[in-house]
Structure formats: C-alpha cells, structure tokens
Length: 171
Image (tube, rainbow, N blue to C red; front, side, top):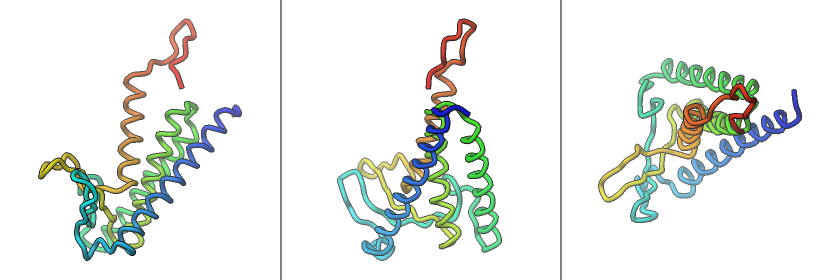
C-alpha cells in the first residue's frame, strides 16, 4: 500500500469522524439548549428555519420503522451498509472517492446513533423559498451522505479511466 493512499484513507476516516461529531453536536444543540421539539420551528433567516422533525424511516421517509423490531432491523441494515462503505473506502485509491466515502460513512454513523439511541433520526434543517421547500427537513448527516453520493456519481460519470497512453483519470 502506497503512502499517499494510506494518507488519503486516514483523511477519509478523519473526515467521517468530523462529520459524525459535528452532526451529533448540532443535534444536541437543537434538542437540549434550543429545545426545538417544544418550539417546533425557529426562523433563522428568511429562507432557513430550524424545524423539528423525527424521521422514523430512511432516505425521504422510506422504510418507516413502526415498531421496535423494524427499528432495530433498520439499525442493522444501515450498519451493514456503513461497513460496506468502510470496506469500499479501504479498497479505494483515489483521494476524491475516499473523501466522498468518508462523508457518507460519517453521515451514516450519525444517523445510526440517533436511531439506536432515540428510535428516530433528529432532523431540523429546513431550507425554503417562501412556502416552497425544495428539500425535506434534514440534518448534517443527511447533507454529508447526499453530497458524498453526488461526488461519487459525478466522479464516476465525468472522470475517465486511464487511456492507452497512460493519461491519468485524475485524483
């Protein structure tokens, strides 16, 4: 294993940890000091509110867990997915892909902790233009997962593999 690749993997794991910590701190702040659950919504900017939401499902509310067995099945399923992302990160050599996977991993663990601890994921970020809401209410973990997936897709679609002349696809 080359030194740059090892360095990239450390950076990916550090990014995952930083996202996990930032996510958990933000969720603590909206839950305890701001008591957002009681306030329901706090306007921060004309286009951004903190709005309380409990997400019992996964992405966009799919696979909603209606009981404890389903909750723990979701925890197990998302944990297995996080382990697959970790394994993928360990096999990947390109820095951009490793960092994108780190974003996904950090976000996944942030939401796994919520679901295991509370039974739901705490969502609070509410972007809107007037009454139009282009996104569901989300959190830092959700944003990191989404951005990581978009980066992976963009890199897969826009960057080319090495050609016959040895030109690199880029890092």
